Amino acid sequence: MAEGHAGPEVAEVRCLLHRAGIDPGEVDGIHGPLTQHAVERSRKRADPVVDGIVGPHTWKALRGSARD
Image (cartoon, rainbow, N blue to C red; front, side, top):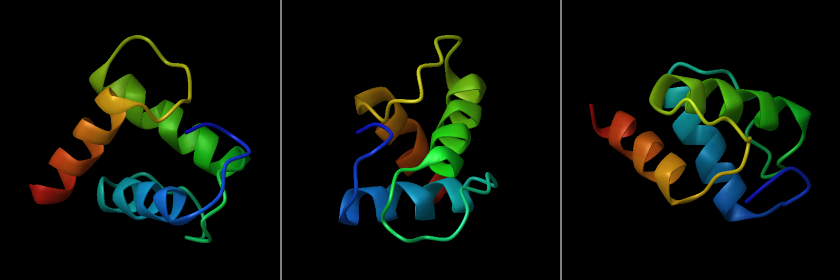
């Protein structure tokens, strides 16, 4: 998932980012610039490679932080 995508998965990412203490903006299901920057900030916490794409590694990191 990357900038420009929309749907329930984007809403989940935004909720998980919010739970992780990273403000992705309003949870509206749109992966826009605010979500992009929030994903990049979350990736910096877990991985030195920052591309703004929500892939398997990012999903795992976000879902794991939501359980803490």
